[in-house]
Amino acid sequence: MFGEKFIKKLKKLMPWQQTVFALALSERMFPNYCLYAESTGNGDVALIREALDTLWQYETEKSMKVDLSAILEKIESIMPNPLEEDCYGAYPALDACIALATAYNSIVFRLGDEAFDVSQTSLGTVIGFIEMQRGEELTEEQLYEESLIEDEMNFQVELLDIISQPRDANIILQIKEMAEQSGVSNLGISLN
Image (tube, rainbow, N blue to C red; front, side):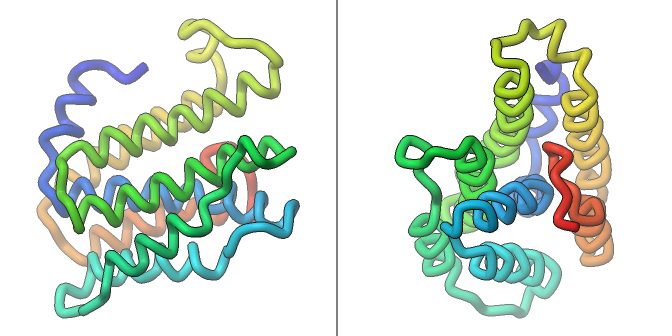
């Protein structure tokens, strides 16, 4: 759904930008995981919150030492399996975990496609949610008419603009605040 120009810019991001882009989308999806955990009693909200906070801190305090691989293993161990669950919420919760794991992977393995991958994951979460509500697959034209799609695309474009600035801890903290959206997720789910 994003144009070729946007995708090219994503793929050209420096390693720290790949990480922060993925982390920001993970932060934005965090309420989806919280709702899943609250409604099913599964998952570990505290662990996901700690993993998010640790990576934000790691990106703003370069002297910080942390075992990123160990945290990545913990995230992977609590990922929901939607095929074994009765609630739709397991899908957006899984996407939130995948996005966060991808942010960690962007530091541990540095493949260079992390921002693009998480961009597609987040957009896919929104598309899946809309189609689940409508009970049918929608065309690209129909999806463009949806306010959640418009919000998602605008958020990612704005995020890419901000992240294109030189690296600075204050910019990264500004991105974190933007991604928190006062506790409202990419699906419009609120923590309040």
